[in-house]
Length: 200
Image 1 (cartoon, rainbow, N blue to C red):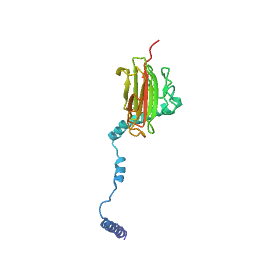
Image 2 (tube, helix red, strand yellow):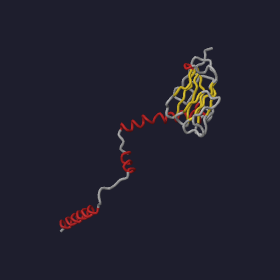
Image 3 (cartoon, rainbow, N blue to C red):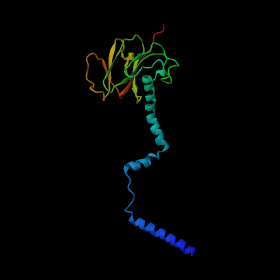
Image 4 (cartoon, rainbow, N blue to C red):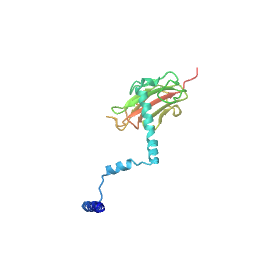
């Protein structure tokens, strides 16, 4: 009796599975977003490493640039916000917290520029030094050197205009009194002048 009841239950379940299978109109369709959810959670170690290698510089530069502009604890190179150049009159040392290993053989003038609403013009003075370089970068960490004494710059004052493709109301046109135009690769841009002081 028990064997018959067990067999009957198994037979019923089997019959139900066949009936349910017949009502199925084909394989379950998934949307592309559902498919992406599945594949996103199954990244290989190589894919994860690739993502980290390609994105780390953005995180690192974001931290550095934001500290320069917004963190008073960053030390002597703190710029008190955006579009506010600061010239350091002393060589930096271990007290600077903005970057891990600052150069301590040059004086800095730094500017964190917000180029979204208007172009920014910075006037750099003539500098009597064999080594002066204007270095630029954004969150991408692609560094540029638009001005340098090795190119004959800084023998006289120079007005430099910075902008991006997204700067409101400006598309790279010539402006009277501007000596050099630098197109930035990001809306938040970093321009810092490094000058080697003469030994006394």
